[in-house]
Image (cartoon, rainbow, N blue to C red; front, side, top):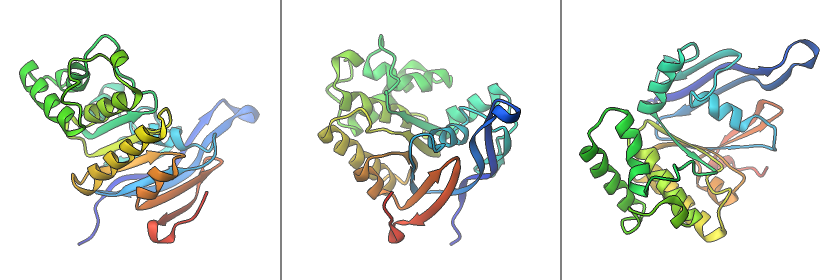
Length: 236
């Protein structure tokens, strides 16, 4: 069976400034991510990894080129249209968790469903199931400042799943965690891909997280310089 392309970028550029002072964060990036794939994006600081992820995740737009999600060109959508794509198709996990301080874990997980127009009861029921999935069934009423870094990141993972997205985009999800908590997040993402069939793309410097990926994409100076399967593993 032919693999389905979930994400595709074609000659994507991101340029800041004009003329001689212009800086190219991305320089003609071509990339395909297939449905059900687990891919890791590598490269030194300033290589364009996060910029590419933000453009693929409809958090930013390319200066030039095209981005396709599930066969649809999202390159020229309006801000409102991009917001709908993010809400319905993409789950995000960030290094800094991005939880709302005044809300409980349950409320933080439920809030994307509430924004999507679901009832409070339906949103909370789904949030409870997901918090149990990430082993936080006993922390639902705790606010972020009452949780460890690893627990906050697990809340963020649950939140990323609440609208049943096509893909999870994770930007340095273990970057702020101690080794034990980081290992737990590594295993959790691996489980989401293997047992829950979620497509995952991570930006990471964490070797443990990277080794779980099936595709490794190396970036340098705004370009993809290598993309290989796990069988062709290379070190960065």
